[in-house]
Image (cartoon, rainbow, N blue to C red; front, side, top):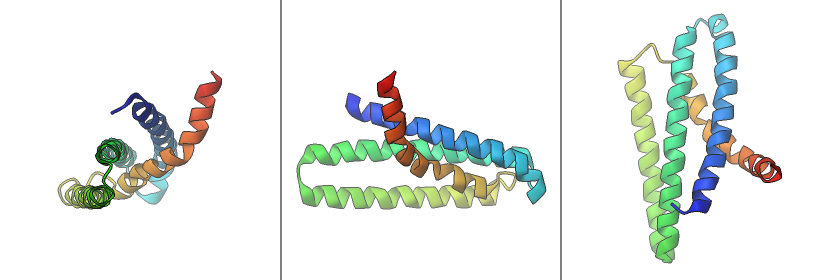
Length: 133
């Protein structure tokens, strides 16, 4: 990855981390009220965080790969195929977690992985804050 892409990934990862920290605090506070154990919510958030960061890195690598190709047809095909592969692997991960590890809260995994969206929305703010320092 180029240095610019690495900076972007780090800024987005910081947003993902902030989202998941808030989610962990909120989830662990209110988990007993919902009948869930705190550890199940915490484990779900950690797995969701990990999944979000892995998906972010994969997207960055694939984006750079298709940009280097300078072929629009190849870029479209490659990004669609890799997006489908990412989604398929994520769904398989969720199914395996629900099936093999019932102590992990699947809702926390899904909400934790939504940190990818939060990271994308927070990236411009984090970039501006970083520039000021």
